[in-house]
Every structure is written in structure tokens, then in C-alpha cells.
Length: 233
Image 1 (cartoon, rainbow, N blue to C red):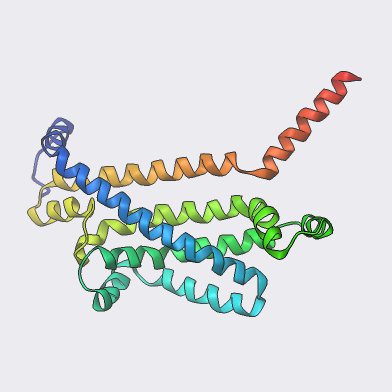
Image 2 (tube, rainbow, N blue to C red):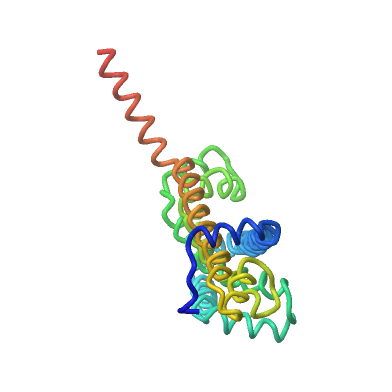
């Protein structure tokens, strides 16, 4: 593979000839990541709420999710393969387990950071615990929660590239095919879109996180109001 001479033009030509196949891998990669991270978010947020509510339970939940993330991704997928067999299901379950820790931990931290005065104000106007959670705690913890989702998405995109080892699809198919055939064009044709996907996901979620940052929005709003008051006087 080291003596294989190629240029960027060769890579672009190869990707052009195999656009349909690469696009299929790309879409499959996205679907696996969205499914795994989406399930992790659905499960992880309630677990984060439990951690914030019950101190004793939080130690157990965070210990389990931290342990799952410490396990090497390849080892985890191989262990899951014994239970779920070869295929996409194993990959999705692996992405789910790998994504839990950042989502649970950031949800927990975000909820613990909510100023108690806001919660007391909500109680004062007669809000139920469920209303406090969805109308006060979640909106104020949203920045932290999105941080967890952002970390989980980037991790999942990377882990999904080893899906072919356990019978999965995605851009990893092209990478491993290139390794087996000692063809760098195939390796880069799979690796570059995967890397760009991770970068785009990180940037988009960062923009979303900044847009939904209630604290920053309130600060800007207060600054505008202060400027208006000074101008009026």
C-alpha cells in the first residue's frame, strides 16, 4: 500500500465512479448513528433526571455508564455480537451504550446547575413537579444536555466506522475494503466522509446549543434593555 502512487484527482475520480455505493454507505452510516444516539437520548435523559433526584442512585447509574464507555469499542461490539449476532442491530446497540454516558452525565450536571430560585418561583405559582421539570429545569439545563448530545454524536460517528467487523454497514465498509485490498483510494473514500460528517455534526450542534442558550439570550436581552434605558435618559 505504501508504494501505491495516487493523486487527489485519482481519489475524486474513484469517488465519482462509485458515487451511488458511497452515498448508500453514507446514508446507512447516518441512520445507524441517528438511531443509536436517538435511543441513547431517550433513555439517557430520564436516567439523568433520576441521578439529579436521587443522590444514591446517581452513583450507581453514573458508574455503570462510565464503565460502558471505558470498554474499548471493538471489544464491546464483539461482546454484543454474541448476544445479538452479526448485523446492524449489534452496531446500534453498541452506539446506544457508548452514547449513554455523556448524555446522562450532562443531563445530571445541567439539572443540578439550575438555580433553586427559579424552581421556588415555579412552585410559588403552583407548578406541579412535572411542569417544573419541563418548563423550568429542562429549558435551563438544555445547554448542558446539548453538550452531551454533541459529544455522543461525534463519538458514535467514529465508533460506527468499525461496524463491518460485526456485520454492519456504513462508511467503514469502504475503509476495511481498502485495507484488505491495500487500496488507499478506498480507505480515504470512506474515511474522509466519516471525518467530515463528525465535523459537520459538531458544528451544527454547537450552533444549536448557542441558539438555545437561555442564559446568554437573557444576558443579551438585559444588555439591550440597559442600553435603551441609558439612551432614553
